[in-house]
Image (cartoon, rainbow, N blue to C red; front, side, top):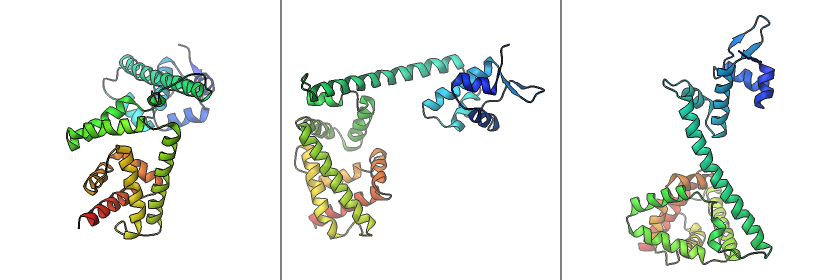
Length: 257
């Protein structure tokens, strides 16, 4: 049986000796045996296990999860490799699509070809994730939401590159303005936030391609409870997700009183 020392395996796999030592310490990758010279030696089984560890790490799976997967009863290395291949092949197709979109955009900006505005996003947003998100909206708010989604899609497509850039810059300004209210200790019900909330509602109406009534605006606040929205708003300022939802609903209530 061919074996490798820890230094040889580290060089072979492109990882550090320290990493292999850590994997040993946490029980994730034990050597086949330790020699009289106290060197660790790794055989084929360990090489294959290390391959699985590195593949799973590239798929953003934690070391604790990897250990549970590899040590689970009935773990099938061949079946796992086939599944990983399928997953990576899908990712490769998506990244290849993104590269094509980037190349076409460069050509468009250089005046070398024409490109539909909608094609600027081909391969950039996961079609699967977009479909799941839209299905979540329809399931929560009913079939009428499909019409709203289509209207929003058409409104975005109708914008020029410059309009879209200004549109997104406006949203950033609005969100930062509202987040500043949070940082200053203003309660989300404060009327002092109304000018910025009004700007936000107007921005939403443009993205929808139709009027955004106070009732519809309050409904949008419910949508912002979705984990994807919460993650985005929390990145702007801790606590901003709940703050924005409360501010939107408070403004909507005041308009109907």
